Image (cartoon, rainbow, N blue to C red):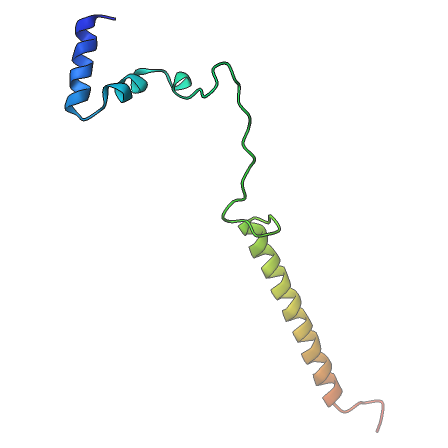
Length: 96
């Protein structure tokens, strides 16, 4: 790299408030910026629960679906109870 160009970059970085060490880090390729143990491949971090998941790990969509199914079951039971009550109040045609 040309020393003039390097000096110009450092001066420009200092003018915009970048620390020369930070400027050097920014100039490095993304893959070289973070390597706590050189040569280490690292490990995958465990997946954390989403904010949209409940304690059982159900997504927000599953929660809404389950709530709708429960509400539909309650409505169905309520209508069946109302129909049974109505039938009980009507005089029976079998008994004169």
